[in-house]
Length: 122
Image 1 (cartoon, one colour):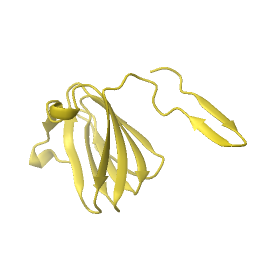
Image 2: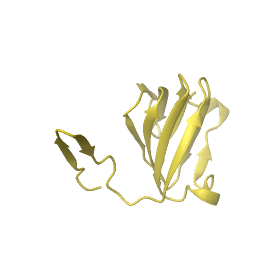
Image 3: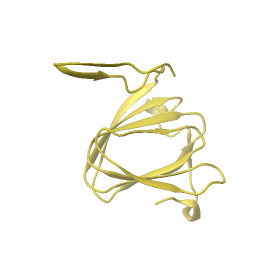
C-alpha cells in the first residue's frame, strides 16, 4: 500500500482509507445479534469500513489466540489472507467491504475456508 492522503480545511476533511488495487466493494447489512464470518480467506485481503452500527469482531492468526474488539462507525478493519475472522452485530450494522482477491460476484465463496464448529470464533 502507498501512503494515505489527508487534507483538511474550513470545509471539512478528505482522508484516504485505502490506497491499493481493489477487486470489489460490497455493502453488507447485518441485523442485531447476527454472526458473519467464522472463516478465513486463502488469497483475499478484506478491509471492512463500518458506516453505521457496532460489531464485536474476533480475529485469530494461525496458531494464535483470539483477539476481540468492539468496532463502530468510522473504524476500518483489515483481514489478511489466513486470518480467521468473525463479526457479531451488537446493533443493526452497515459496512462496506473492500476486497483484493477472488472474492466478488460469482466467486464470493471461492476463496473462503469455513472454520470447523469447534474452531468458530463466535
